[in-house]
Length: 639
Image (cartoon, rainbow, N blue to C red; front, side):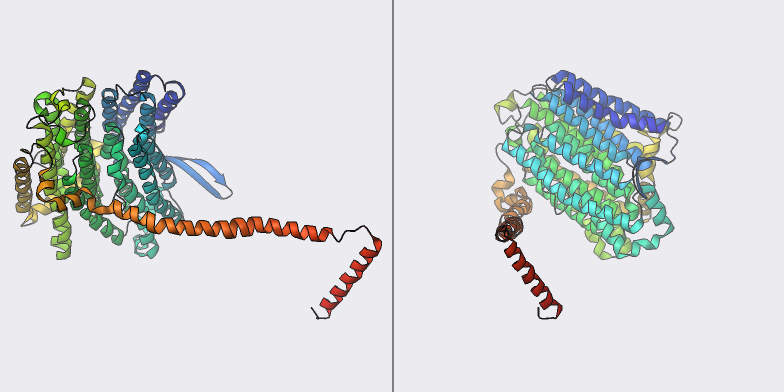
């Protein structure tokens, strides 16, 4: 198996698809669909072939790309257990999302542009997965930002989509600025940006992580993760990104863009000093609880799921901060399955209800859309970490790790456990609310009354991803087949990255006196929360009961703590006046003083000197003697 050739084909296939669509198929929607979906499934097939035949040994190969004197820059592929899991997630989940898009975008006039955008997005994500150094990773990182901007702005004729795409682009640039500064500092401090070489340096000299430079580099690289994975304090772009088509929301929120931040931090985990890890742990735990609460204040089905994504990205960040990157990647993979199912289920509902997104204008869809409803219910139970569903294994491991952190390192760290536990209860509340309001009761609008099940293009991905939402986590039981190449439904090469962390937490829970009782408490409270939402939300005919009974609380959750309001105030009252001040300085000093002023002074000097050239020999003699006198006066010190 020639891995460099296969990786090159996998990487270039979506780029070729995007180029063909852009150049020849922009007005041929159906052909553009075939090119994009065909390349997506071919990538999926090649990825599975690699994962099933790879020997499990780290593969690294690079080629010199540029040389400036003694400086050379290489690009290549680094493929290990982390990359294998991410390749599976990106290729498999994204492929089914692309198939779903065929049904969802069937009446869209700009199918060519949409599917071309999906292909360039896939190219960008695959580049991040396979990159062997931080510069190459950053190049594809920025391409992901560009392609997501293009996809979010698909409905560019609407003001909301325009504003949302610009917001996503600008906010991500804030994080990426810190990221690129961290990359430069990393090269200055360690002398290389090659990921494997950096890991070898840290392994040989672990004391390097004790320096202030290491802390600064870790925090700056973390900025890229904070931006792309929408973590505190620049999480505000993610919910607005719902302005794009629902398959884009599934692609961004489930398997790819936001997961890229988690993948980055797992990739460079060896560069993160304890201080940086603790920062990530607390901010992630806080986001888990905060975003879970905010999901209860949204009536837009996609925005509610977007806050759910923020909450579960918080779980992954918490796992990273606790020192378990394997658990973070494990939950990332399980989250990709059930969150993709939830978003595609929401897309199926929106499509059937003529693009209505208000959950209080839906209702009664269980009888009308049984496949969508059942798969949505399975994914909901999985995200709520109900026993034996996929999310149970990954999410409960992170909660257990948080408890063990408090038990082993001091009472203050129980705060992390409390925050992620609150997030778990909130998950049951907002998912129960969504399911009962959308699928049970009576239709609340004419569109809901006449809704019907979606086409096979949309239901087949729902069934497959829904099945994975139910069973993918069973991989922890170690059921092998195909001569050990497969462990349950995952290639064995993909399991190694997280199974060690999972087993370690399981053993510690076994030896802990409160581990199992707290796990049972988590399940009991989750079930109780789901039941409570049925009685509180499931019987509501119009409007949100929380808005009627506690309008102040509801408004706080709806405005997610007024983060957007604060940033709007900051831009208008602080940033804009400062920019205007610098603009005035630029006009007065730079433009007028330096540019126009020097030109004006030169012109005046030239005009004055011009008058000295009168064409008379006598005048030139006088000037000569005047110069001699001035020179003599200077020489004797009079001037």
